[in-house]
Image (cartoon, rainbow, N blue to C red):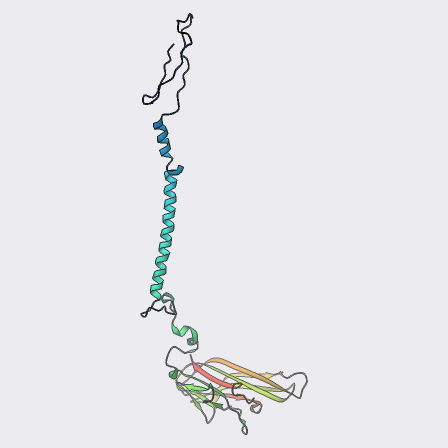
Length: 273
């Protein structure tokens, strides 16, 4: 009995089919029926094509391209950052090849940083309008308007500021905005609950008869509960003021006889901003 089988012509192996067990004719009224046949696994060509579709190491080509694209993005970002760093380093280098102190892109004007906040704008030190004078130790004459030493220790005058020895003033020879400060230190030998003193900074101005008070402090209640003991106290004044050309600035203390004999405990100064 024959079996009709559909098969691929290119399959390299012979097809297998089954027939009835006897070699003679069958004595049956029914016509012989075909015996079921089975086909073999797909051909080698179909297996190869399926293997190729999976890509390298079982990874699909689409996924491989996506991973490669992500790697390219990472390397591009790193390269861009390296380029920016090199660019900034080149901007930081001056003519001598040394790295400058300030970034060129965020350079701040000198008058806004460091000592320039106090008016030192990079000009020559000898031309700066500034002065700092320290306490002068008096032995016989005690004036309310204090006198100072302008050439001892750290005391100095420079630029458009002069110290007037005759009356203890700092005279400014240039109109502008100035920071003015003063500190006094007093020792009360018989301090009591009623002990007090005044500390004043004032200016005498051309064309203005009475002096103009710039700063003033009144100190009281600084003695301990037990009276008749020595007690040291101090006061500091400081502010920004507009001064005109030829203005003379002074310091007054209500009890100069109590001033401590310390050059650096008592001082007075100003500088142009």
